[in-house]
Length: 166
Image (cartoon, rainbow, N blue to C red):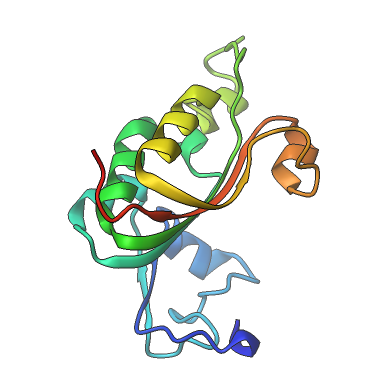
């Protein structure tokens, strides 16, 4: 990140396991409480995406990678993303969807760690209603996106929040 010379006032990281990762994971990027290259500009919050509702049009960019399937209320988080981004703000989103997901055993670790599986329709609506596309990869033809290569279905999207949304 240092080599790209980003002009960043503040880098906010919402991570529900931030304190645990910083204390117990050897290669955690923010183990010192700062992200290398953003010293003095990093805010690490031990909170998840569910807390985006605390912010209203304050972020220039939000990046979310494989978060929604680990939450209980993905729609609330999508709403929070939209509301937290400034008009013209950039969204970088990488998520997978599963159309025919069936829970075999509710006590299975896969089910416990992935309480929700989004469908493509949700992403299609969210993206088309509120964002102008910069890069959109939601098909198997976009085989350069890791999420598509690994799971066959997913969304890799970069876009800007529309200045006004009807």
